[in-house]
Image 1 (cartoon, rainbow, N blue to C red):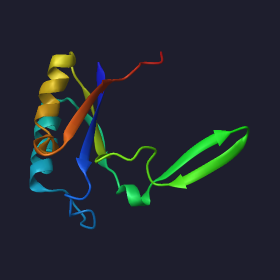
Image 2 (image 1 turned 135 degrees about the horizontal axis):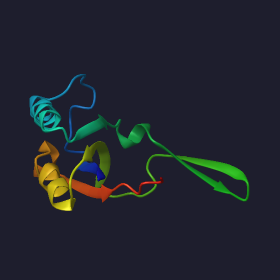
Image 3 (image 1 turned 90 degrees about the vertical axis):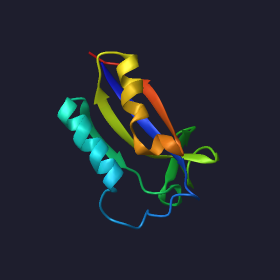
Length: 113
């Protein structure tokens, strides 16, 4: 079963948005999960200051800067994994470096046959 692992972190703590490349901790995680055959992909997201929220109301497209909800933790990135069950997906999520100071939301993919 496929799962989306969504990384949430406090942007005021994260200071390396302007850097290119991957941290050694994330490189190790990606290599380990790649060898296990569970990692399908993933991306780091730009900060919420670069986000735009889109709504359509009465046929009119409305946009606002930033995320939909103001919260302390913001969506910072994601990994798509293929795991045998939720227990394995949780185990994989627990190995993501961002779980130490942020949170990882584990959500099963709704397969649309």
